[in-house]
Length: 306
View (cartoon, one colour):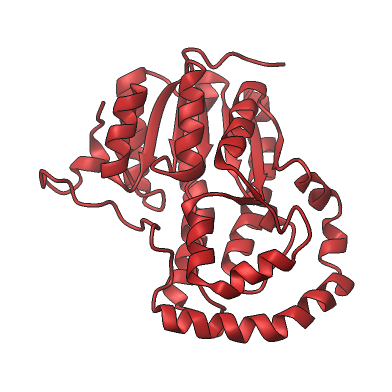
């Protein structure tokens, strides 16, 4: 059953750019009242002004920061009807040679950040009999070399969502997990620019693993999920095949095919990461940027802006 978003309060993490930004734009066009959470005030502020939203510079891996953002949403709107737990990052390199702090940070943001977001928001979603949409990935179903922390975090996010769905169903709260393949965002473009080996690997993969979907199409699927409280969201829809055939994708036969490609691609990728000299993409925000007005510590995370 489709529900109108008109007047609904929707909190989006990772809202400064990419999928989060475009989901916020499309939800606002349907009449939703937006609360934007992210790490880039210089992008959040003009976006919020354009959408008539409130915004918070907060780190999803910090519980106090997320709790303060949620309190700000309640102060502004009095309720939270839906949450899109979208904030995510992707590190560079393999477990053997990559920057371990960047690899661990990927799991912290993608999985622990979702857990902290859910913990901060669920009491209010229960009060509203609302909806939680958790952004996983097609990577929850198929592993690729050089993406071990990302694949692990997204597989964990999916099963986290499956378990939380059972915990809150009796409260009338619905929980969905979204599984996009490669989306035309800064995260994917940065990976292709940083690592030619990654771009070549994508070229060799069959659809949907080797194809890229526009960010607008992905956001439209997310907004549809908000309206219909969907349990699973696949972008593109062919990712559903990966969901149903995940056992085959993780079989020894599929592994042998990937191993033959990895013998060449992994050493090349490790060399490119070493030359790159950083563990994340150029547009990955890892900490809240300082305010132009240099307020007291904690101001950005503890007050809301509109």
